[in-house]
Image (cartoon, rainbow, N blue to C red):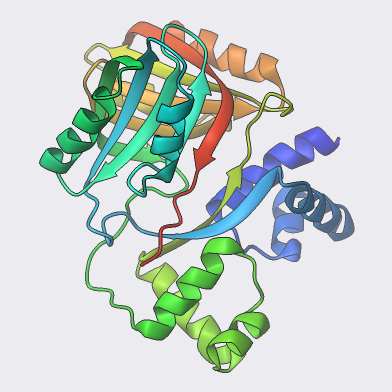
Length: 294
């Protein structure tokens, strides 16, 4: 029962990291005491983190890319370099012909090329395979900024506090920025409504994790939107984006029930709009940090 509840809780917290225990209980149809206990256990164990992140477009990052790295030697130094870069929020060790997957967030294509050139310069890197996202359909920290919103110094301080714990109470936030809880609540809600800020769950994935996480690259025929619609209907879909490069559509499916993920992959392969598919297992998340300072 806990496994099923955990999957549903994670999905709910990825949509709204500050959702109340009562709201989560109503969504899951479970007792509030059970829900609050599971959330606290997930957070205390480090399996899930609730963090805030400024929208990438608000930060001037309009070019997002998925980069698969094939190594020709020990990649420890490369991994440390990638983890240290603010413009690379995700580094994951994967199975298959590639060794690592990273996500790059850059201001434009020229800036992206500079990052790729820097990575290619490592003698331990044999080759890169890059897909640039053209339309991100689902993701916890995707760009949804419409422009027009503004922040001041106190807003920046609130974002900085929420970067480390997105469920920090308004009372605690208020004490640290020397405002009333009501004023702090108003500021956070304004940033959320202006789509400057997202607060979501980040799931730690390791060799010991109970959840299986699979990357999917799809080659599509003419009916690409119907494939995307089918993919978006899967509760296991954590991320999906149309792209330019080796794949037409890239996605991530995750669940604590491996059979559910495999069933979705089998379903995708059978769709008329899918002409080819490649998959890779995420073995260990080495970095997942979208919460950059403003």
